[in-house]
Structures are given as C-alpha cells and as structure tokens.
Amino acid sequence: MPETIVLHTRLKAGAAEAYADAHDAIPAELVAALKGAGVVNWRIWRSGRELIHLVEVEDYKRMRRELAQHPANVPWQARMAELLEVQDDYSGQDSGIPLVWELP
Image (cartoon, rainbow, N blue to C red):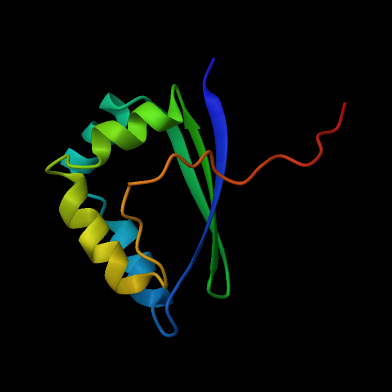
C-alpha cells in the first residue's frame, strides 16, 4: 500500500504563471523516473504563492534517494529552484508534513 505524503512549498513572487507553464509540459523522462521510483500519483494545489503537494508513493525516502541525482530530475529541480522560495536539495530525511488528525 502506498504512503500518502503531504508537502508544502512556496512560489517566489511573480512565479505562478511560469510554474503553471512548466507543469503543462512535464518531460516524459521525468514522468518515467517518478513512476520508476515508486510514485503512484502526485497532485499539486496552489493558493496564491502557497503550493500543497499530495504524493502517493511506495516508499517516499527511497524515491527521494533514487531521484536525487537522476538525469531527468536534476534539470527539473534546477528549473523549480528558479521558481520556488526554497530549493529542494534532496539531502534530508524528511517525511513530509505530519498528519495531525484523520476522520475515524
């Protein structure tokens, strides 16, 4: 059963249109790399500059390790670094935003 991970990122001021444009044309090799690393689904919502990502993945930490230096992900992360306030360097052992409550 996949893990569900929630992430929060923030766009730089004025970057919303470029961010949307980038996501209109995700490179096929990046999609293949994500799926190969165990990503089942990845959805992103935007409110102003705030981005919420909902990631369904077999093993989040393994996915991060596999993509850290992947030739399809490195240029994508460089592009995202131009648009996001904080660049993701794939060095941490994060587990996303912790779940506080769930409807029983």
